[in-house]
Length: 305
Image 1 (cartoon, rainbow, N blue to C red):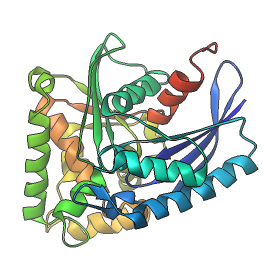
Image 2: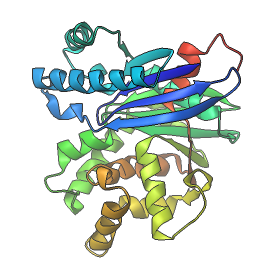
Image 3: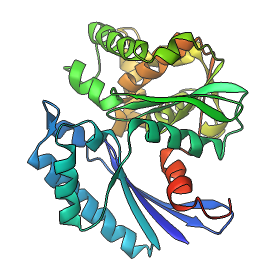
Image 4: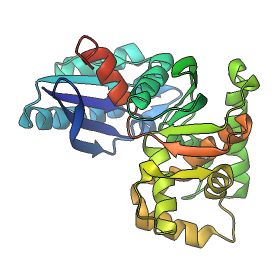
């Protein structure tokens, strides 16, 4: 069975095609469009130009899905359509024009699906926190004994923080402080997070991968990024850009992850602040996330896993 999932995010719109043989999944294609739909939001409302842009990207990806012969195609949206005042109108307009349904995940579902996807492939510690840093929101789950205890979403992501706080390409010292203040305020509103201390943070998604790729390239590490573990001090170093390391850091970002030049540092600041809040000492990465969790829960839940 060939399954296509289109993830309509705030920063990118991605089609991933999987093959399911009844026992395991295999990723076959991963096609990313840098839609950055969040740039079309003003006063919490998506403009018509933004809706038009989403429609264009979705139509192209749907053609690709048909060309690859998918047996089932699903489209879901996260903060891109969830965190806008005209969510229902935008969704209806897009669905009418692409002639296909879209499911908007709420913050709890997005966070929980990320955790469910992660635990399919990661050997979990007794307890820890998973974090999925997107373009317009970040999903946080505290788990214990392989069970999600608390799952929540904050309306801050790598791209939204950049657009709200950064004037130039990367945040200066004052902008970094402002970004940290915004993150701390949002985290403080998660009452359950205020009393939790864990050793391990597991990252999901593109920002987490980007931080790992930077470390892998800097130290010429040959192992997979999914086998690597970073200490809290290393994460803090990547999140803190100052005059002394600015040139070398920017050069590394341009060489390794040029498409995340403006978003990796705001995203790393979110990760750093969460690790500091819960006093986590170790960060590592999951190969699976919200798309895989969505697939297992929405499409394959009645299949043998």
